[in-house]
Amino acid sequence: MKILVVVDMQNDFIDGALGTPEAQKIVPAVAEKIKNWGGAVYATQDTHQPDYLTTQEGRNLPVAHCIEGTPGWEIAPAIREALTDVTCLTKPAFGCRSLAETLVIVNQNQPIEEIVLVGLCTDICVISNALLLKAFLPEVPVRVDAACCAGVTPESHRNALAAMRQCQITVDNG
Image (cartoon, rainbow, N blue to C red):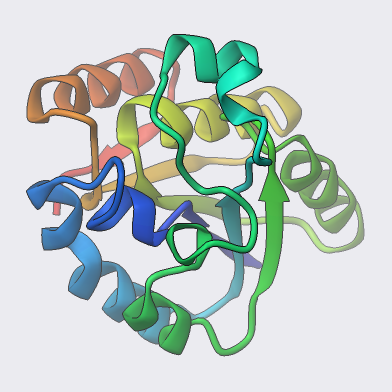
């Protein structure tokens, strides 16, 4: 079984509060990857509450984003349309513990051949989830499709890809 993990393809990360041109650019490629995927699809959704700015993350990144129920929290329309058969998991932090725990159970019932991650932001949530999955499933190959990811900046995107390579996560460059 192959698993595709679509990380935080939400409006606030694409063209909202924390959006970037690089994030906007990958939307068609991510939608196409989802449509052509031949396995199970899981999606994460960064989820904060109205008190976000009083949290540790909010004090360190004082930009309200992905507040549950707001338009910025929603998965981008082109991605949402592609996600026809998906398990969507909300997460209050960078890494999605419930994703890792779920995939451990999946792997026990039907071995996972590989996990491929795409999405936003390479240097925060993609790397966090890739490392979390590698820790929970050390013998399952974990890959990141760099062409379907974007970071906070192009430089931090490249740095995150290099860090993942060092941790035995395969990075596909296109």
